[in-house]
Image (tube, rainbow, N blue to C red):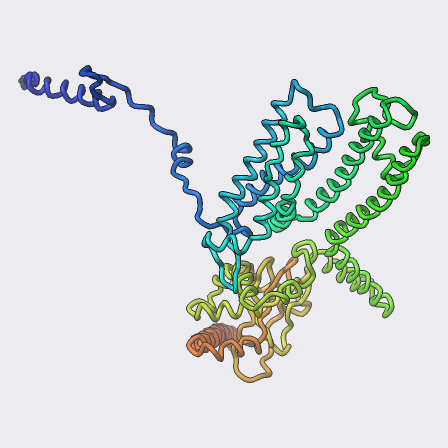
Amino acid sequence: SKAPPPPPPPPPPEGEKKDDTTAAQEQDEGEEFQFELLGYPVKIPKPPPIPDWLQAVLEYRFPSSIDPFTDIIYVVWLFFVVAAWNWNVWLIPIRWAFPYQTTENIHLWLLADYTCDFIYIADIVIFQPRLQFVRGGDIVVKKLWFCLNSLCFLQMDLISLFPMEILYFFTGVNPLLRFPRLLKYMVFFEFNDRMEAVMKKAYIYRVIRTSTYLLYSLHINACLFYWGSDYEGLGSTKWVYNGKGNAYIRCYYFAVKTLITIGGLPDPTTVFEICFQLINYFVGVFAFSIMIGQMRDVVGAATAGENYYRACMDSTVKYMNSYSIPREVQNRIKTWYDYTWKIQGMLDEQELLVQLPTKMRMDIAVDVNYSIVSKVALFQGCDRQMVFDMLTRLKSVVYLPGDFVCKKGEIGREMYIIKQGEVQVVGGPDLQTVFVTIRAGSVFGEISLLAGGGGNRRTANVKAHGFANLFILDKNDLAEILVHYPESQKLLRKKEFEIIFCDSCKFFKTYLQLRSRADQCLQSFNNFFFLLDYRQFH
């Protein structure tokens, strides 16, 4: 017989229902602000939750000090300050010369002007007092020293904000009264320095900046030409602007033909026109020659490394031709030049680092090579500072496919760490038999480096399988380092003994295996001859 079904659960008591209802009402009420106003209850719903990005903005606190050389926020701010300065530099001449500022749009011009003034004021009040600077070798971050350190710049910034707009009440909105805003020119050069330090290819910015200089000189000339044409009377002679078409574009076209001395312009007729054109030609030749010289310097600096590489290549080829070096050797040397320049961007890394202090050379070596050397089993457990010192002594060398890194019987003075690529241990009568392939992160030649005394000869032939980039550590360099780290020296000696012992054990094991095989072969021969003699006897 089946068991009867369980009875249904009893309904909850009325007290619990009331408690649940009361909790829900309290939760709803908790989402509202309640207060009394003039004796009447007032409920205001709570605002929605603030998004995470807005919460992060609200919780952001402006730094008390700013490093002007490394802080990217300051570079971004300089961009806005330079944009405000460029507004005044480019637009003041246009508004003064051309009839683009009218009563209908004057409010837009003033809005842009005072926005730029606000950026000037924010730079002086917020950013400049927080800039770090060096005083007596110490980095000063206190605002009290700001006035003493930047007195000259502060004076120029304050002069640039001199409120000459007060004269608007007497002269009207004259753009020339904003001329003091141009005195904040130091921020432009500071922005250039920061941009060149931040960009990976600074020569691109230099080319753009030099081109902007040329465009601005043409811009000023176009404004002056329209002013001269208006002074003489638009369309009064063939030389002046006739008032047709876009005034700025046509005057800019005149400036280009004048300053670059293209020619093909109408001859001036009045004394004013002749003097204006003579000054244009003189200034044009002078300014254009300066721009060409600057552009040549910028392009020359951008291609200095490439030119050095080509000069080294040409000198090497000339030397090889003068001594009739075989063509095969010449091709391998050219291949080494091309590959080394392609992967490193330079022929010798030491030339780049030799100008830096020892501490900075070590920092660069640690960032570049420590991840590779730290994986080498030979140096695991050694003093960390010893490894850092060793990194500055490593020399990077590129081997071409088929190049022998070392040959059997040579005197060993270096140890090799494979940075990139592969090498092979080869042997046989034609050195084509591959015994083992050694890959990136491995070490070979350490016996010659660790063994005391001299005359340690290589025991194997090692050649590059493809393009191989190796670190080379000289025996003398390691000995100079280990003098200061006796514990690491003991550890390396112990590992040297272990390596030699393991090699000896392997050799002895191989000898025993060969001896056993020889005994087996001899026993087989003896059995064979015994059987042969037995058959002949019977």
